[in-house]
Amino acid sequence: MQRIKGLDGIRCFAVLAVIAAHAHVSWMHGGGFGVDVFFVLSGYLITTLLLREHEKLGRIDLLRFWGRRILRLVPALLLLVLVVDTIALFLPGRFGTLAPATLSSTPGVLFYFSNWLIVITNSGALGAFGPLWSLSVEEQFYILWPLLVILALRFRRPLRALTILIGVLVLAVVVSRFLVFDPSNLYQTFATTFRVDMLLMGALLAVAFHAGAGNILRRVSAWAVGPALVYLAAVAVLVPEFNVAGAEKKVYLYYTIGLPAVGIATCALIAFLVTHQSSLLTRIFSLPPFDYLGRISYGMYLWHYPIILLLQVRFAPDPNITLLLALPLTVAAATVSWFALERPLARRFHHRLVARQRVAGPATVTGRV
Image: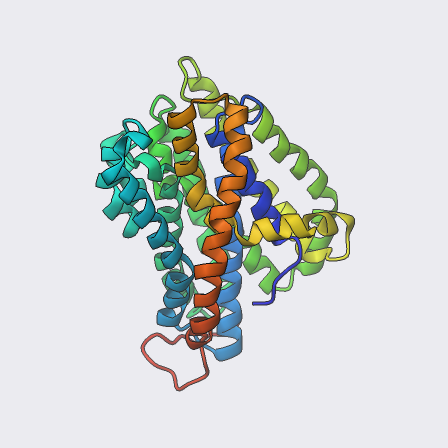
C-alpha cells in the first residue's frame, strides 16, 4: 500500500501523547487517548488493505495477511520482552514492585491476550508491559476482522453488507457502554469488546472511501478537521486522571460520550489528510521529524513505559524531568529496533508475503465490489 502523506504524523502525535500521559505530567493527563487514535488509524489501514487486495485479486489471502502482521509486529516485541524480562529477573529492583507481574504476564504479552489478564484479574497485571494491552486488542482484531470481511464480501452487495455489519457492531458497543459500564472499575475498559468500536470506525472510513465517497469525505472533512483537532487537543490537555476518588462521573461521561467522539474526530483528521495531500496541515504532519517519529512509533510505544519506570525507580524525578529524559531514550531504543531489526526483516521477507494471483482456494473469496 502506497504511503499516504500525513498519516505518520498522526502516529507521531499519538505516541507522544501516550508517553506524556504515562510520565504523569500534569499538563497532559488525557494523553492516553492516543491509544484510541492508533486504533482508528489501524482499522482504516487494515480494512483498506483487505479491500484493495480483494479488488485486485478477487480474494483475500488470510495466511499471507496474518504473516505480514506477524513480520511487522512480533520481532520487535520479542526483543523488548527479552530485555525487559532479563531486567525483571536479574535486577528486579529496577522495576520497583512490578517485576513479578512483569514476568508472570509475559505469556499474555507474547500471545496477545494480555488485555484480558487485566480484565479477569481486575488489576494492573502487566507490570512493565502495562501499555501492551492495546497490542492484544489490535491482534485480536487482526485475527477476526478479515474473516468477517470475507463473509461480507460473499453478499450480492458486499460493501453495503460490510457497512451494515460495522454499523451494528459500533452501535452495540456504544450502547453497551451506556448500559453496563461501571465507572468505578476502570479495568473493564481494557476489554476488546469495550474498545473495538474505535477500530471499526476506522474500518467504516475505509469502506466509505472504497465505495467512492471520496469527494463527499473531502468536503465534509474540510470543515470538520478544525473542530476535530481542537477536540483532540482538549481531550489531551483537559481530561483529568481517572484513577482518583470521586472521578466516577467524569469517567462515565468520557467513556460513553467522549470516547466515540475521539473516534469520529480521528476519522475526520484521517479523511482530511487523505483527501487534501497538498494542504498546509498535511505538510505540517509530514515534516521530517514528525514523519520519522511516526515511522518508529511502534518501537516508541513498546519501549517508552519500561524506560519511564526505570527512570522513576532509579531517580524518582519530577514528571516533567521524567518525560524530558524518557523521550530521547525512547527514540534511541526505537531507532535501534527500527534499523537493526524491523526494517531489515521487512525488506528481506515482506515481498514473500504479498498476496499473488492464483487459482481460488480455501482462503479465497469472490464477490462484486
